[in-house]
Amino acid sequence: MAAVLEVEVGGGAAGERELDEVDMSDLSPEEQWRVEHARMHAKHRGHEAMHAEMVLILIATLVVAQLLLVQWKQRHPRSYNMVTLFQMWVVPLYFTVKLHWWRFLVIWILFSAVTAFVTFRATRKPLVQTTPRLVYKWFLLIYKISYATGIVGYMAVMFTLFGLNLLFKIKPEDAMDFGISLLFYGLYYGVLERDFAEMCADYMASTIGFYSESGMPTKHLSDSVCAVCGQQIFVDVSEEGIIENTYRLSCNHVFHEFCIRGWCIVGKKQTCPYCKEKVDLKRMFSNPWERPHVMYGQLLDWLRYLVAWQPVIIGLVQGINYILGLE
Image (cartoon, one colour):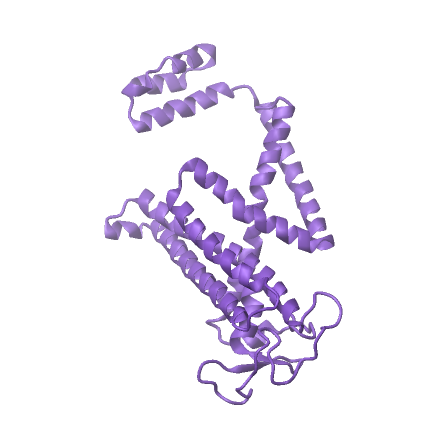
């Protein structure tokens, strides 16, 4: 260990040669990490100006990329959402295979298989009457599971930071890995299911005919029909339903409670499916225990940028540095 410390404090070309001559096989994992750390510092010694230039390139690329993404989303939201969804789905798969995260790969395959089936059902014409409920139930289930998983992961991370893991004789690194893994699973699948749900909601609502992205609906909405699923409403707004209640928006259009909740929370729509009037989410989710679901959905929308576009931007920065000969 003393030899390693002497090598670390060595400077210049002589110190770098000493680091290269160290036999890593005789060192403990901690000592090997310190030697690698010292090698990196020796390699980059005297490159402060180059590092400053690399930081400027990173900041400039982030700013320009953010402006371009915002303009793309505003001008062509459909293509932006499709490309973002594809990247959200594929980019983590690349790192999973590269880093041999087989547990994540198994869960990803199962999720993709069921979601592909549900998406296939949602895009068929004519639409089967039971499909809207199937779609919303599946994505709402994934939404709740991701929400609970994210909360448990966050609590595990906080317990580890406060040292509570020692009460259960769990190593800090194991507890932190467990918490971060759950947090990642919850946030990633939460973002992914909301994007797929939004796409399916658009297809189904336009197929039923009571909703169109622009222009007037192609069918007249009856007072006894739900514009989300196209099924009859048998429970009056003033009555208490056995399975679910009927909900009336401020525009006086009525919907199945599960349908309009799925439309707003899971499908990310905040307008009436028929007349596009703004939906008052605070009025709809008056129960304080339900409001965190809305805030969680907004958090997932923000995290989409980090998961889908951050790896692309970092790769672009590395490409620029390589072209300019910066290391």
